[in-house]
Length: 380
Image (cartoon, rainbow, N blue to C red):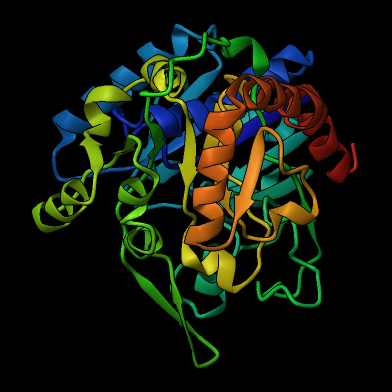
């Protein structure tokens, strides 16, 4: 099939190696399945046109290295999502190319703020792809973000979205859940880095709140990790966060035993991001509290990258343990005592957990399986 991927978050973030790595799994994985894939990147213009053009040049140059030269177009537009092509400057192709794609594409996958009507309506089959369940729907329900628009299919990584105790507002749509995945040929399995290698993760330091039905829902990674700030001291082993922290928070975490590194230095490209993961002992992941409060079942594409690299994952449970195998390679925890037990278990039986991590990636998160399931959910 000819599939168009519309997105609006990658070109403007050149040093986000993890974010780049996340989205690249889609065109690389679909191409591996034999599909004819195109990528339309929508980028909101700033007041610095020269800087915008440099970002676009860098974007097109980088994707060419992945064999996607001629398969990606950038639309520089005054605002996102993009609805009218006449408003945009087109790079890597022409407006006519985009119009031809809208007529010829068998399927559009519209990620977050990519496209809106009337351009959206030109596609004969449209799927909305949600990778931030709960956060997205609450914003849409409270008119803080956007109207999701007219799509034929709605897909989310919120695995529990239609469960009775899941608090994600469905907005009147029937959602199909999908798993984050890894294009496995991109991941190398490195040797055990040793006990002194840290448990790590890469994240953004956010602290926002959402208000919904008289509830305060935190989307703060600061709140999430603050609950476990003393974990390195209790576990008496190295922990590390790749995150850009304000000075006071950095001082607090360092004094509690965390090493803090700058993601723009250690994970500024997809290759550096994967290398950083391979240098880690395992991942220690704290999700946004909203995922726990709403029981979304969210599981991170970053955790999938760790598993694919043969690195165990210790993750706070959002409800994913209902659908994923845990205890070996992937360990879920709910409080600091369970987290400490998980750290000890990984260090005690590291080789076993490392092998199991890669096996989980191959059995559950292989892009070939997951993408075919997503396509099936789109009626193809």
